[in-house]
Length: 221
Length: 221
Image 1 (tube, each protein chain N blue to C red):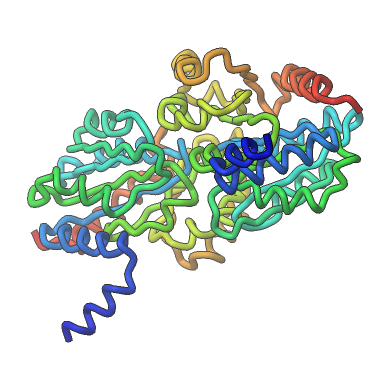
Image 2 (image 1 turned 180 degrees about the vertical axis):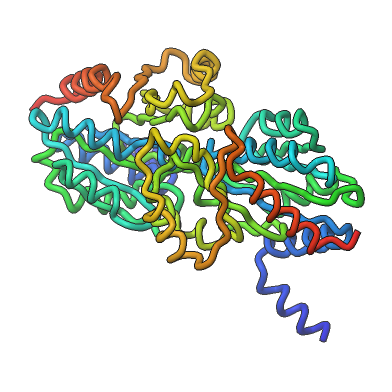
């Protein structure tokens, strides 16, 4: 039995092994964790701010922010009421499980219900690195254009929920929503999708309802 | 003398050695080459289309498009009148000199004045890989937000010109141009900058004037 576990672990990459350890830490403390991924400027931090505004009275939320440089995002999350930790990757284009492990060691996980990990803004690299979070959320945005699922299939294929931000800009931008959705459906059939505007608040109720269900169905606190 | 050249070449990475070969090929054929880099959806392809529309009667232009998947961008460049080659990187988050070398071998360089290389949409990885082009152009865009120079310093530090696209969206988006420009100036003092809108055409004349000067000051054709 021990032998078999050893064999399974040996075929995992070093990153995946640490991701498994992170997951066990999160599970042991009953923390539900999400990995937010997106292009630079799609609105990950804005979605975190709007989410905190709507749900931080119900849940204890921590945010781990990954960026090449600065603590701009963690400062925004902290200002919005979260316990926030900034990871600066130096030059790395994505978070990895070892970086998240360091951040987890700084948190009192027992006091947290929901952990949001904000990855480095990048539609390619973060998709290849497991962190140990329970689910991944991709934040797309209208100004990025409707062809992104076709051009960045790895990212769209691997996520558990899709937020389409900046719908308030639809009147000013050519964006074929049917074409976009066909691309998503081809790569990730049935993917749960939330068109929203962090600016106007449109669509955020549905996102919050989904998030509430995810946390409560996971939680036994 | 030969010995010294050898020493210098040995300290270059494999990528940089091929980038040097690419540069020699381009120089030998008197082709001026630009590397376009940007976030996904910032408007690299739109800028190529608008550039072709304004200058393809004067110059022979070729476009090499790098994407994870699809030939959407090369198709758009070809429809706009360029000789276009698509490189699909598979999963790679950037072009490298070897990929560009393959594309160059498909082109009759003698018949080309200007080569535009459109890198993979990514604000991190492409900055680390020399291709052999003469200059690099970063296309930023208003919806990405005014904090991007601070958060992606490697990219902003390494480019020779900056285009700020989608200025038509300024009325609908909170974007502090002074804060953005201070970040750019800190990283890349005196960087030549073109605020433009590929949608309305605003600012494109200055960009085209700059481009014309770059090509003609390089060219002896």
